[in-house]
Length: 242
Image 1 (cartoon, rainbow, N blue to C red):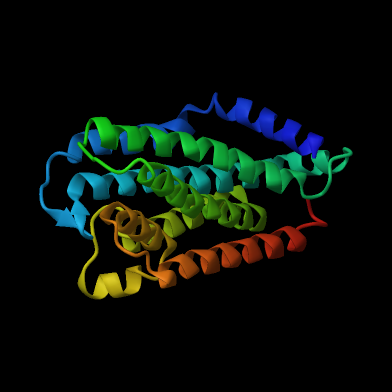
Image 2 (cartoon, one colour):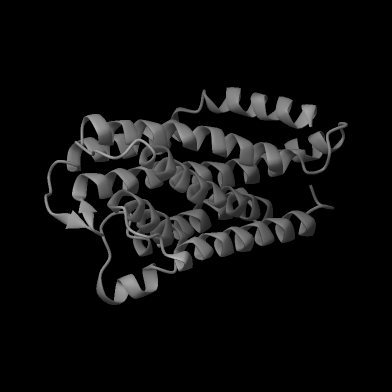
């Protein structure tokens, strides 16, 4: 376990120098929130637009960091032989995958906290003390499950294939999950099956003080199991080639 944590620290230090990663994980959702949070009135999913958009942008930053950066980096490192080199060390076989997920958990948390602070002090979102950490943890868990999907994509595909595949998956969950705008009608019927929608809806239900749907919570757990399953299959399928 000590070796896995050491690898995680090294990954974190390297990631802090990746400006592109932080632009999309932290800067983009912050800019969008500052630009749009006060531009609309009314309620969305039972809460003010400012509160809805706070959950939305927290999810956007965390989701982007968990999926986009990880999938591309894993694929590139596999091509360059970094994973093979790690397997020659005394690290356990799972260390690389675990370190990627831990790094994703650490970096996505930063974007969530920043956007939630903006919601409180810029978006005039007022919640009970217990609601803030519960909303943050809901978004954090929901976004971090995409780290498992990133492992699956990164291990399975070559770098030149990963970027378009990741973008298709990313925008599919982004649009169908209602991250850019609230869903309604037929699109909502389809979108409510996505983990991005489920996370945002659970977050707004917590803010509203409504009972959280058990179906939404189960949905997130099911998606987590699916993504972990895909990651396990991808890692085992490529075990002899990296």
